[in-house]
Length: 139
Image (cartoon, rainbow, N blue to C red):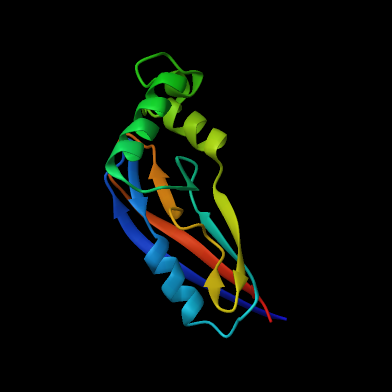
C-alpha cells in the first residue's frame, strides 16, 4: 500500500465563501503513484469544512442561504462571549458540516458523479489562508 500526503493552500474570503477545489484535488491524484484506493480531503482549522455539491450559482446561493437559516450569524453564541471574536456561528457551522471527505479512486480517477464537485466552505467572519491536507492511499 502507498500513502502520499500533500497539501493545498488557498486564500478564502470567509462569510460562507464556497470554493471549488475539484480540479486541484484531481491533479494531486493524477500526480500520485496510486491507481486504486481512496483520497481523503481534510481542511485544517475549526471554522471551515468540505463536502460535495453541484457547483453552479443557484445551488451555491441555496447552500449559503441554508447555512444562514440553520445557524444564523446575528445571534448570541457562548463562544463569542468567551472570546469576543464574533465567529461562534462559524465554529457551529463547521462542526455540522465536518472537516473531511473520503472519495474512492478507480483507475486514477475520483469516483465522483457527473455534477459532483468537491468544495471547501469557509464560514469564518474574515478572510483566511486555508490549508487542505490531501492524503492519497491505495495500490
